[in-house]
Amino acid sequence: MTNELRAPETAAIPAIIRFSKRISRRRYGVACAGFLTLAVVIVAGVLGLGASPAQAETYQDLEAIRAQVREFILKQAARPEGSIEVEVGRIDPRLRLAACERPLDLTLPPNSRLAGSALTSVRCNGSHPWSFYVTARIRNYEPVLVAARALPRGTVLGAADVRIEKRDLSTLNDTPLTDLKQVTGKLTLHALAPGDVVGFRSFKAAQLVRRGEKVTILASANGLEVRVSGEALADGVEGQAINVRNSLTSKVIQAVITAPGVVQVRL
Image 1 (tube, helix red, strand yellow):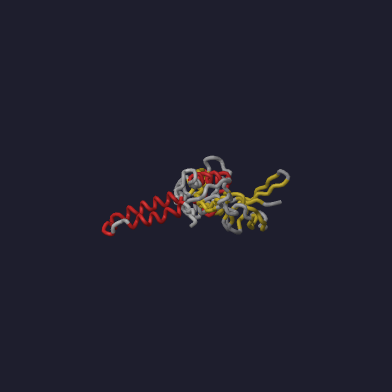
Image 2 (cartoon, helix red, strand yellow; image 1 turned 135 degrees about the vertical axis):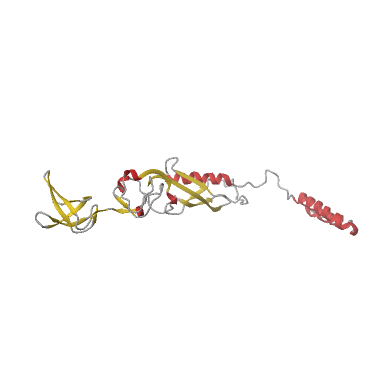
């Protein structure tokens, strides 16, 4: 009769079964839990199911990923320090990603606007590849014009009516203005409270000339300037060409509005 050599793990299992039969049925409720625990420990030990620390799988550091995403966005923005803030969203701590032996590949969607919410793709191209997206909140701070005081609707803006402040561009619904020259002499379309951002939709060109109003007509050539009185035949704003009547000759000519009550003839 030939004796078969049995693997240690297969030989141990019948022994466990025989041991279990010795447990009294009357003591089943108490002993069963202890037996099952013992059985699991024995089987795990025999079959080698317990992993040593050296064999334990390592995972990607999620906080390190968040730090990389922040630095990546700051680099893409290429903005001076202090003019941009990046707040990376929380990554679910239950996420288990195999440690990547290669540098992570970070990308933004094409034509991404680096303001407000942004979505960054994080990809591992290692032996155990994985990928997922990380959200971030981007705040861009730029100097813009804001109302220096309460400005009722119809106010003609001047230097004393506005000031420069840094604001987060991602929170604005209108394109802000940054140069005082853009608003000087313009007319507010709606009331502005102190600190309100002055955007392109906040104002319009002020009406500098009204129909029937007396105006000064300027004409210059070769260093000579001639001023005559005239009458505006239409309303107009700065830079607009309107018809005016020369009070001396009654001739109607076209002139460009350059200031309140002043038009200039192009020669």
